[in-house]
Picture: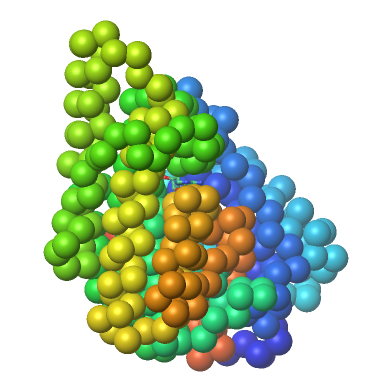
Length: 340
Ligand code: KG4
Ligand code: ZN
């Protein structure tokens, strides 16, 4: 159990960010340190699991120290520890999860092993956004593309999921194909500002059908379009390809999120995950939500990408309900998000 106003130290190392944050009362961020490994993985065009795990080992102690210093507190002030338990890369997860458990054991504090996606949902609970259920959550990241009906915090009903690639994965693959570097999402976001979103009419898969997503057809269409243009010697503007791809992938997410909210009569939509940092998604969803009379909660970009604050917030919620994770429970790269 943890006091309502307790300080939680949250650790996130499920992929390639080494991130630690101190959060008070489950919503007030005292510090939020994110050490990105982008430069280590960029030469390979994607995250190399072994490199990610090693970098977490090297950086985590420094990142923890920095988070405590930024928050102007010492370890003694903490009332609970939270760390991402899964899903993610097992070697990367283990570093933060083992460190979190060790801290909790040595300081005799409660511990929470947090589901990464529950963390992304809790990004909207943090700071001034302060959303309360019921709401619809669109969580779009490098590994997930999901729509959840959230009747109450802690209970997540899956309404739709990707049948193939995650949205972030599609951004990263198309960016690599266009030689835009890694990570691909921010690169496409930036280049798209120079291009015409209506230059090429890429497919919007399953847009009239249900709440699931599919992005592999869009990916293939972009590759085919570029290859055919090159074969014909057509002078292709990369910025137009990027902007048209981005428009297609954003359209599908906006349409499905609004359809899900309407079907479930949910008047609030929250977004989270790295792709929720995309400027076109943020702008288009804001406009469409407003037109539909739905409130849209958009966390700060730093809270959309992987961070420790969302893990601390979700951990605080679980620990305040006396839902502690036993220290003998291991990290789980395929951890499921339960519906209750
Ligand atoms: O949530 P996140 O930081 O890590 C995972 O849980 O996967 O999401 C990372 C993903 C990457 O695929 C990255 O390219 C994408 O989020 N991303 C973006 C943007 N910023 C990050 N995608 C589109 N536009 C962005 N601005
Ligand atoms: Zn994530």
